[in-house]
Image 1: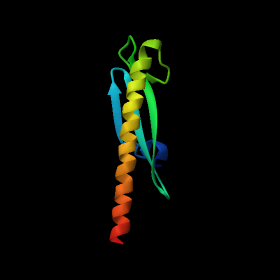
Image 2: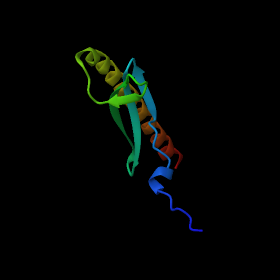
Image 3: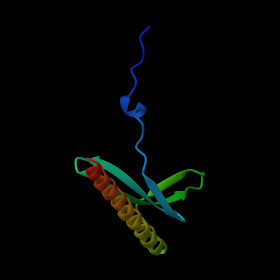
Image 4: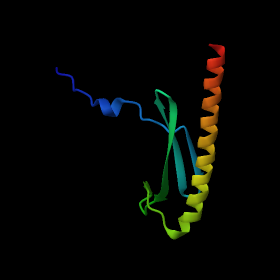
Length: 99
């Protein structure tokens, strides 16, 4: 009996954000990308909503009522990314000192 070949994409673990910041329906996800010079961080912003049938969805479209919350979430994400970068630099300094 032949075995069915699986799709490698569906079996690979899905990347997860380092952190998420959420205020109401607006969410920022902070992603870490390791590079030769150390980690780099990116942020994605989205608004989550539930349809009439109860399914959750997300969008990168924001209405006028979302904009101030979006600004606060973006500010909080920026602050956290700067902290993460500072922590990374400190670890690199400690590694250089120990070497």
